[in-house]
Image 1 (tube, helix red, strand yellow):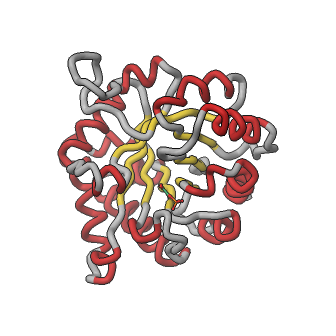
Image 2 (cartoon, rainbow, N blue to C red):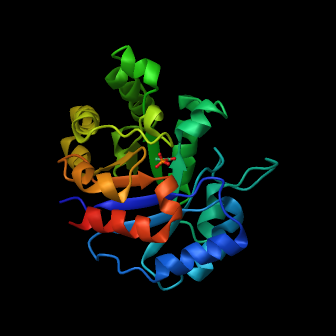
Length: 251
Ligand code: PEP
């Protein structure tokens, strides 16, 4: 039985004041026991969030990390070891904004994935197709290649301690959501691809859906058999809305 997870990606949002307010809202929520909850603030706010959430059952993660585990001469980057030292437990790898805007390739992302695990962080691998790719009938091919690149470089055992987030690019921040059936089709394909290598690993790995999830659509999405929770962008910036999404995962 996989334990559901709901994670909030705060992206490049927040000031110290607004982040403190958001954390206060989160700390006051009545969250169900059976759901793992995590938030991913900007790097600048990680220490603040870790300190303020001390004693709460909400994990903190980073939105990105360097492709090297150790410290060194890499101006402007933050190593996963430093993130772990700061209190992070997870890190996003390959969010579509980083793949598309920052040009991160599958090759670089497999190094980031490995460096994160080497540092004791759990990578949350984000994969998903663009609208053009979906319209061309290439969704499963694209998502399959993104997943394969990690399996080929690191082996299937890399997914024993990892989370996968299927996030169709056309649904991120657009208000468009994949239907529960569309999302389930891709999630089932991801699990089947993992099962070709190792069925135990495939059954254990949590597959989150991301893309304009709100309280209003979360119950239906999370009700699908291969959807184990969500990666939430915009709606995670509102504590009450985020809390309602977490409760939907607990149903
Ligand atoms: C995201 O950025 O990971 C995301 C899913 O964003 P949104 O929920 O705003 O679509």
